[in-house]
Image: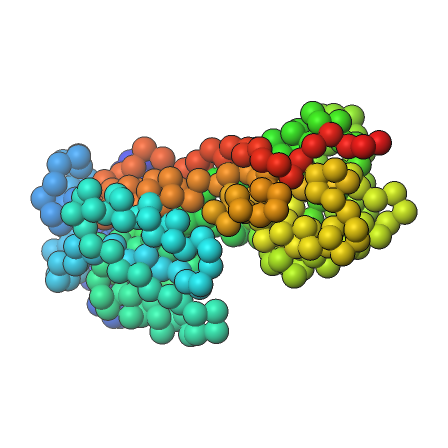
Length: 349
């Protein structure tokens, strides 16, 4: 536990006052010097329980030594940060955030860090607004996370696209299990030539979905043929191009698992262009369960990613951190489920 780092504390206590940072002393600096978490320092500053007397004493000593002054109170607002608001996922996420925020009587501010904007300037604006906490759908850089920590603003990353340090709170989905369940469904229907359109290799969820595909193939005694996996961007256009490539091969697949629903809709387009019927000639499975895919022709079988539930869990976690609580888990994964519709059927051969 961080509170037991007595040797680190003793070393810090022996340092002269001149070793304080050149700029303003932050809550993060106090926490690091005392060998405790930022929420622990926040509890001391706010006179809350849950801190041992020894820990409270050494945090208070550092506060007095460095002349730390508690900044103005943070607003009773959660800031929800997107990289791009035009995505079909945004409405589902906002719905989950609003459900929890309304119950807790907390306001929600939605910000967009544009794909080509200067993120450093935008995070400066967020810090200046002093929200109670930040829920970031946009992926924050190391420097941006440290900037929030330095100002004592807790944050949670929603559906991380890359590996995070162990101390960064996040909420995601069971992408590996979802990929595995999609392929198990196709195997259960009798498919043996199952291809996959994977997503960018630097996107964490896409790697997990592909690993789930490979696991299900191996468990079924089917070869994991690299020629049957095409990497593409997560768009309808790129899904169509990847499907054309797969369907042009001499031994074309009887089923395709796509990394997301947009790619899967691209598979529909490629199949029509090739004169193939879904599901009679080709079964298709997507991932996400966007509302629009239930209206596709035929309705798409897909892995349901519970975006609203994920957003609600992320909001609960962010607000707990905003109240200075130490949550039982820093990382949460919400279960995916397979939604079977009319785009899958047993193969003809």
